[in-house]
Length: 107
Image 1 (cartoon, rainbow, N blue to C red):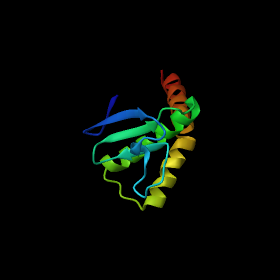
Image 2 (cartoon, rainbow, N blue to C red):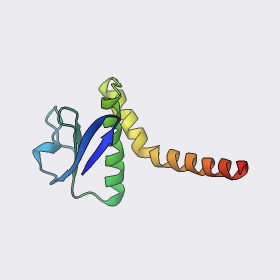
Image 3 (cartoon, one colour):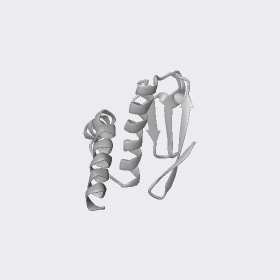
Image 4 (cartoon, rainbow, N blue to C red):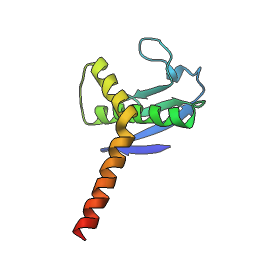
């Protein structure tokens, strides 16, 4: 699957949990990886719907950071990505709801 962030085309691929693509740079295994050098996000193919959504949101946040040249210490970037995975849907849903209400009031 291909998606666009800014002017970059990224690839989303699902792979077995034991895939070498799911190794972090420090050698530890994970369930999602974003690799800016090949513009690819790999996600384990055995996740529940809930975890797939969280991991995808987390990894897409990394992609946004890469393509907008947002350089943060890795610990802070991970906290940002986790925040988006935890609260991104709630934020977007609330904004959509408020914008709909505003459009209704204006009309």
